[in-house]
Image (cartoon, rainbow, N blue to C red; front, side, top):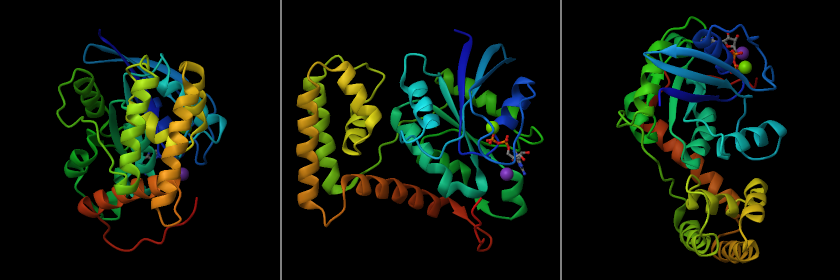
Length: 285
Ligand code: GDP
Ligand code: MG
Ligand code: K
């Protein structure tokens, strides 16, 4: 198969539409505020003998199903029409915030390649990023880009083709450790899922479904209700797991513990790889 389906995913304003236009020769509106892309645009182009189909998705900060955009993206990433590769575009000067979405995409089990965009801004600030090391820690091939000028984009698609063909050893699944209160419950819930939902589509990882159920994710609950004949057994196992977590924790909910672990993972990875040249006062955009 010489056809690669690539989905562009990232926070609002990180440069997705700029990348889409540069790569595909399209002229979609590039915005300096969030919310410009309200629907998915698809573009096609050829790169090194491959036909690349690229979809510009709405910008989002997470994959929690709280907004129509997030739900749309979740359906797209977990449905039968899922992309071959997720191209995660991040603002390199704002990694801490951007990587939360990245972890959520990785947990679905989709192969991810990252555009470290706004790299010109990072260099202007003289921040130091060990992107080689960060790519190993996250299991994600990464390429610095400046999508406004197009810098780095051809190499980015070389990486995408290599990853698609299984030739990039950096691309690896990651496992976030959710700590000694939550992990045993993920484990036992995964077993229950295997027992009560043996026909679960193979492309959905049981661990991902277990974590999402512990987060009381409504999209995953609906999925279980729709596809498993023994949904009620799964929900009672989930509720039991939640009560166990409640008993052992010191007031934190499963949701909080899971979110904290994700941020802990990000903080740890950045501590090892990212050095700001000076303290930047962050402004809310
Ligand atoms: P989207 O919301 O992710 O689709 O982001 P856009 O492509 O609309 O870009 C948001 C803004 O960032 C626009 O003003 C772009 O010109 C600008 N931009 C995009 N890529 C870069 C880059 O690599 N460096 C810099 N400095 N600006 C960029
Ligand atoms: Mg856009
Ligand atoms: K902007």
